[in-house]
Structures are given as structure tokens and as C-alpha cells.
Image (cartoon, rainbow, N blue to C red):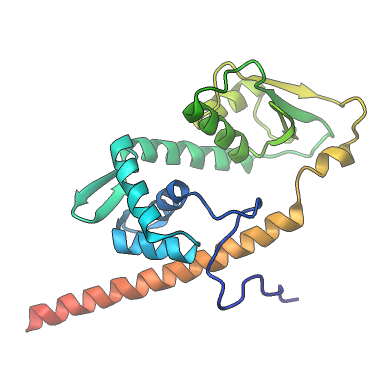
Amino acid sequence: ERDADCISPGVKRLQDASGKPPRPKDLILGLLLASASGRLDVSVLIRGGEIFGLQGNSIRVTTTRLLAEGLIESPDRGIYMLGRKAQQLAREAARWKHALTRVRDWNGHWLVISTGHLPRSDRTALNARNKALHLGGFRPLQTDVHVRPDNLEDDLSLIKARLGAIGLDDAALLMRAEQFAGLGNDDLKALWDCDDLNRHYRQCSALLERWLQINGADTQKARNEGTDDQEA
């Protein structure tokens, strides 16, 4: 059965599960990571931002900030590529995603991470912590307590190390739990809206495909124009 259209032809805005477009930083790094050449012209990044509901000025300002942070580099005027910091983070994220495929049958137990004892004043560290928890498949059970099914083959120390590589604080507490007083497994499963995740995935896939088609057409056009100039 064909999926119902999630995006009408006139809608260019991508929303995540919270109803917001992606952050400019996440979009720029994601598009650079997805690029076959690893390098993109700023005009391509701006066009990608427009498809995902972001203003061109926001993309420009963010590229300047990412350059200053060392997350991207500019080998030529108006051309951007991932910096060493971002490349390392991308590699670690890829390793973690690979680890997520190493699963076993779920026994009904849970992995729990507690961060209530950690400071929240450092926004950079807090954002890195939250991103690591999200990438790790954890969801907030309550403030500073995140859970996910205990179905990974790796032991706790390796899971903790891999989460630390993508931004989780060393002092975060990782543990296993069999049950929670007053909460059943069905209550915990409700933390994951599978229908919404699938719908969001289809939206992302459709818009990314559109961006890749536009980018590919522009790249081929530029190559043709270059060939014509050489022949002339």
C-alpha cells in the first residue's frame, strides 16, 4: 500500500518531531556530510536551507560561526567542507549508529542514564549531552533521567564509552533497570511515537531527495558550462 503524501507540492518546510525546522548548524553539517564531494558552495547550502524552511541569512550567519568554531573549513571563496572537529564527530556518530544495529532480543529491561548531578549552566556541554542521548535512542522519562530498551549487545562500559565519544559527560550515570515503580513497560514504550518517527523519516527522505536532485542538476549544469567554455 502506498504511503499517503506527507508533503504537498507547495510545502518546503521540514519539521522535526517537535514541529520545528532543523537547526541551521545541524542542517549545514548534515548536508556537507551527505555531499559526495564533501564540499558545497554556499549557494547550495542556502538552497538546501530554503527547502528545509530556513532563511538564507540564517545559513550565512551560521556558516561564519561554524568557521570560527573550526567545525567547517573554507578551502576557497564561498566553498565549505567539514572541519576536523566535525569529521571526528561524524565518525564517532557513524560508529554509534553501527553499534545500534548490534541488538539482541529485548528482555523487558531498560538502560537508564541519570544526569541530575551534572551542571546545566554550560550550554555547549548541555547541548552535546542532549544530542548524545538523542543519537543513542534515549528518551526523557523525567528531568535528567533518560531511558531506552536494554537490547544492545555491548556491555555497559562500552555503551558508556561510545556515548561519551559523541558528547555524553564522563560523570553521567549509566545503569540497568528491571522495572519502575508505578510504571509498566507500556507506559515507557509510549515515550517513542513510532508513527510520528516514521512520518518524520518519510518527510526527511523526500526533502533530502529533492535537494539531492537539485544539487545534482546544478552540478551537471556547471560541468557542461565548463566544457562549453573550454571548447570555445
